[in-house]
Amino acid sequence: MVRVNLEAKHRITRILSVLKIPRTTYYDYLNWHPSKRMIRRQQIKEKVLASWLSYPMYGYPRMTKYFNENLNYPVSRYLIYRLMRELGIHSRMIKKMKKPSTYTDVAKLPNLIRKMKDWSKVLLTDITYIRVKGKWVYLASLYNPETRRVIAHKVGADMTKELATSVLEKVDLRRLGVKIVHSDMGSQYTSDLFNQTLQNRQIKHSYSRKGCPGDNARIESFHSILKREYVNFQSFQTLDEAIVGIDSYIRWYNSDRISLVA
Image (cartoon, rainbow, N blue to C red; front, side, top):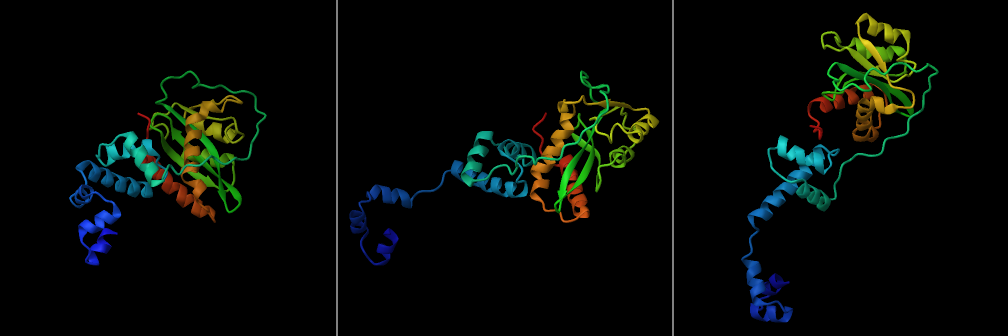
């Protein structure tokens, strides 16, 4: 408004009087410059938005760690939390989808890791469901609970003992020093094929007790993260699309994803 009146050749004193703007306020405005703190805050805000566009699954805790460790840009959680609220952005993770249920009539089998403290020679395995054009396909994974990395995985059209066993054959378990592979008691894992494959490698098989899914919680947590961060935002049209996409995500998960676990 002041600028428009100045361009109309009105005197500044008259303009300020009519608009009831104190002269000190006006001249303070003319001489105002953002502080170093404000400039830095705006720079961080722009970096937060750019980083979130690359990693929309990150909430403020992981975003803070990403800034401090990956970008070597020291910031506090509170600042990142405030800036993400101002930008109207948040972690792009949604609730997991309900999957079909499976059942087994096998009697209770031994859980070898329930009270174990050293899991350095243990791998976990499980199968989860992936939606592809209105149908289910299946992801079998072999997971290291110590490093929180996927050792092997395979996507297949059918949930079979062959799919479950395939991940054991993708890596040299003996060379990795694996002593125990832990699974639930699904029919794929109680099958002769799966157990004979482990016996041939002199590896013991440990089982989650019925009704105790927490025994295999770490690999189930990985499958949940995979879906909430990636799969549930995709519209896979073919099995091949799902294979390529999931493989790409797992490579990123193993190598680059920020972990909040020390």
